[in-house]
Structures are given as structure tokens and as C-alpha cells.
Amino acid sequence: QVQLQESGPGLVKPSGTLSLTCAVSGGSLSSNNWWSWVRQPPGKGLEWIGEVYRTESTNYNPSLKSRVTISIDKSKNQFSLTLNSVTAADTAVYYCARVGNRGSNDYWGQGALVTVSS
Amino acid sequence: DIQMTQSPSSLSASVGDRVTITCRASQSISGYLHWYQQKPGTAPKLLIYAASSLETGVPSRFSGSGSGTDFTLTISSLQPEDFATYYCQQSSSYPQTFGQGTKVEIK
Image 1 (cartoon, rainbow over the protein chains, first blue to last red):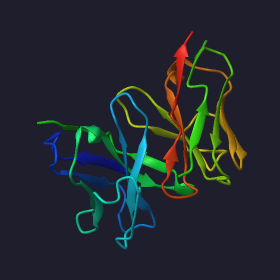
Image 2: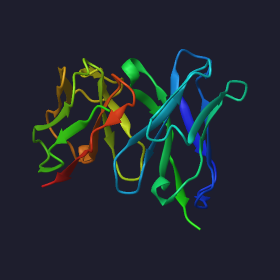
Image 3: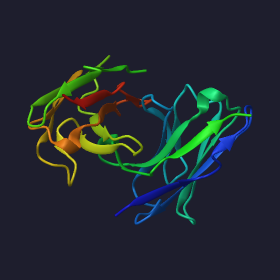
């Protein structure tokens, strides 16, 4: 059973950098899967942020592309999200997920709430 | 970006009711359409992938249909644990996008 767990600071100052890590167990980041990040502002819907493959190839949402980096560390079996120049609009629960059949997200982390505030 | 529009945004139903939620894409997405269930404070859970394929472990009362731009999620007999918010997602083209959600409430 694949399990994912997000970790990182829960509070980030405006104009600062949001950094989260997703640790994967029960599965390998060297497998034939993409690995994604999705976020959800409080009380709102889901927004796809981007994804990374074992080759370090990435795809990003153009709305965030200038500020976001997703990286992978196969030796630690984890992947990471970095979002620069954050504002209050970036306050959200951030989920990591495995990309499965036809691009669906079949395994999800529990989510990490990140608040942007001074 | 492909816009995903769900209807209704919310609905009230009783246990045992048949419930249908629709999702319309702003352009054809073939069969790259997935359905998720989300309960408060928890991560989304994949129910249906590729429009009509039931994810392992998901009860058979959930079913999906459609292709092109119009898709449907059906719950054949609503159970107490099905009260939640449901989202559709397209993975046909980048950026992947989600519908705004449909909240299923107790009548």
C-alpha cells in the first residue's frame, strides 16, 4: 500500500518561500509514475500545481510556473515543492499524490496546511 | 485551460436515493476524466478513473459514464457515508483542471 506524507513549515511570511516535502513509502519514486502536488485554499476547490517524473522531468500550472519548482530525490524516496514570493492567496492545504491510470491521482497524502501571514 | 463545470453545485438527497452529478468540459477530453470524493478535513479519494473505471475497493453503487465533453457520476443508492463533496478532474491536457465541486447533503 502506497503511503504519502507531507511535511514542512505551517507558517510562511509574505514574500517568503514555501517549502514542502512528500515522503513516499510502500512505493518507489523510481517506478513508472508521475508524482504531483495539488492545493486547496480553505473552503475552496482543488488546484493542480504540477508534477515530477523519475527522470526529473516536470510539468507546471502556468498560473504558478514562474514561482514553483518541483524536485525529486530518489535516494530518499521523496519529492518536494518550492513556491517563491508567496502571498496570502497561497494559503491552502497542500497535497502530494501519485499519478496513476490515465493521469488520475490514486494515492494522496493527508495534506499540509500552509498559512501565509506575517 | 480546459474549464470543467459541474452541476449541480450542491444537492440534498435521502439515503437510498439515486444521485447523478454531471461534469462538462469546455473542449473534448476523450476519456481522461476522473471523479473524487472528499469529506471534510480529509484528502480527496479516487472513485472513478478514465470516465468509467471503478477504482479498486470503491463500492459498486458508484459508476461513471461519458466521453468527449459530457460526463456523469451516478450513486445508485445513496448511503450515509456518501455525504461528501465530489470533484471531477481532467488529465487530457495541461494544466490539469478540476470542477468546482458538488456538495451532497442530507435531506
